Length: 207
Image 1 (cartoon, rainbow, N blue to C red):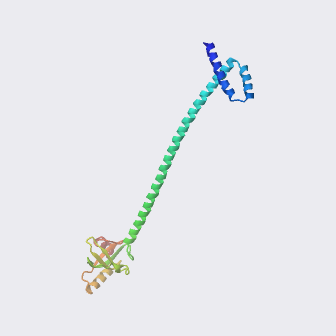
Image 2 (tube, rainbow, N blue to C red):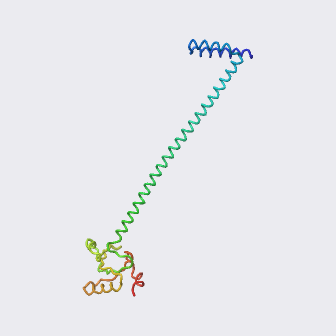
Image 3 (tube, rainbow, N blue to C red):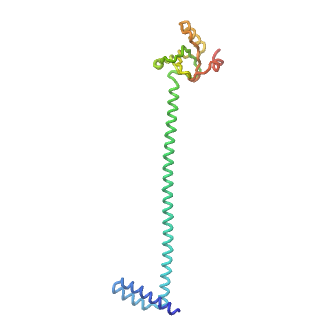
């Protein structure tokens, strides 16, 4: 059995050697034929087995390389996915910031519109001279700080005159208007630009 194996290996090696020689130049072929004759069967067997072993190692390394390349490809795909998520998050943050800035601007604009020109902070007293449903005098308000108006919840345009920090000055102005024929003149208080019930402010300002 050992002889048969040896003969098989020898024949196989000779075939391999002949194929290799066929690819060599004549000079190289002569040199390798001499070398082949000088190699014993045992040495040739060892060389053959070592070659096969190296081929197996190369095949295993190629498999590892292929596996690593696959893992690297998966990592690259994951990195690209995460970069896409980061980019989307940055866009969402930028949009949220833009909306927040716009909301602040809108709030400031609304506050500016609510605070009429010449409107005083704190408590002030005005004299209401009438409330009209079909009369629009808003075009006069911009040209006079002491002539103002607002629309109440009933849809009436409330017209006021004057702006006093002292209640008794407002009361004096109210009485003068009544003597002039404005019978419905009466005092209305405002706190920081917002109309409030007179009982809420009267105790702190009337002396």
